[in-house]
View 1 (cartoon, helix red, strand yellow):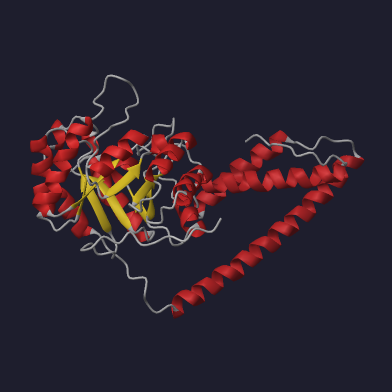
View 2: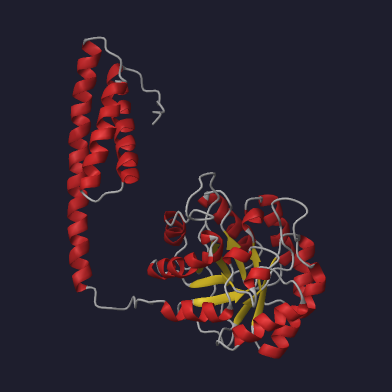
Length: 363
């Protein structure tokens, strides 16, 4: 389905990159909300965010102040002139947020993963055209992300956007949530007119990672940033390690380099022509490799040999990975590429053997 999106257009908000949405992870007290909002507004920022309802991994944690925090956001609008945004996860959240005059809603990663919950929200929003931003699901599933956007679109909403907040992983790495940049890049390819925001707070999970992640998002032509900012991050009731003060936020934003996309492309066109030629050569080499693999398949068939030769495969992985490292290619990239090539080689040999069933090759 081809979706035709409308701009998020909010009077007084420039759509030049980056559009910034910022504020505390959670609205904790009226004083905390107002102190943070006034400081953020003084930096020239136009959109304030705060979580009113906070889905937590386990019960017992701070789950937000609920509807009693909505008047605080109304006060932010009245006293600072900023637009206000909050997360919704149920039909009741939607009704309360709309009644309070919230300007922008977002759907969190834990909600996006549940089509029933997204549909409930979409049904509750039917007949409105409030801007709604959809965070990626916690698992790296692009179709689920697009499906959530489609549900809202089918309910008549056109001012939609996406938020890339990274993907959960069992591996303990530098990031709280793995960026997996190729997924939002593919989302942009599939839905080129959809505004995409980056949430460096949730990707990084640490204050010191917000600046480099924000720059990476700008280098990838993201439209905006949604960053958690708190007047006193160390005392925050949720996600304190990934929140920064409004002053630090201002510093981070001033450090950003926004590269102009409207530049002469003559040199770029020449480099792209080189890439096209190299890609052609790679495909020709791969086709040649597969022809050799088929010849090997014929030999194995004639001599009644099994297709899988594990020691040989291990040797290829080890040697080629080392070669790739010497050529400044990442080991992970070389390994994935070799695994894909090996899987296709095995498939080609299975055809020669007369067995066309697909074989899943374990790495």
